[in-house]
Image (cartoon, rainbow, N blue to C red; front, side, top):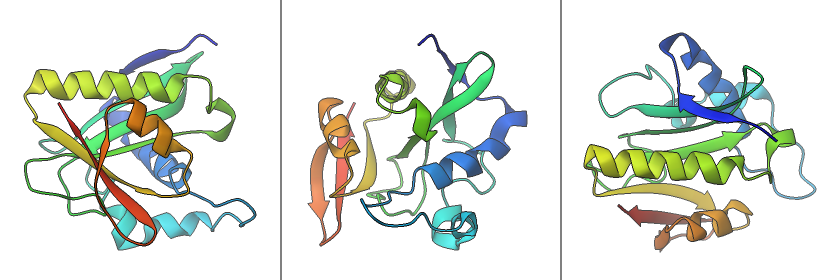
Length: 156
């Protein structure tokens, strides 16, 4: 499948709410929560007022349709480790998963962060999420964990 990766345009920031919702891990056999869940403050931290210093986003586009996004920002989220480390978020619409697009988005963002001089990036992921393998392959390591989640970090 042919796709292109590019930086998000300011006019496209509202689409991040779709990808925030798509990033919610739904364990096998569970129903998807209502879209309104992404309006909760602990999730809004990922996208509210996006576009400030240390906010970066790349999107994957197929035939001029955005199908995935990877974004980072320094925020007090589930994966927060300090005020110099951007937290990582990534998601794709379901029908575009497992095609290598997510891996390409991750690689683009990690290279970009290296070039910008960041030392590392972090994320939080539920232990049962298939994406844990993808994060490990990309260089993320478990820094800490609780009953449900890993806090992972990638040194740049």
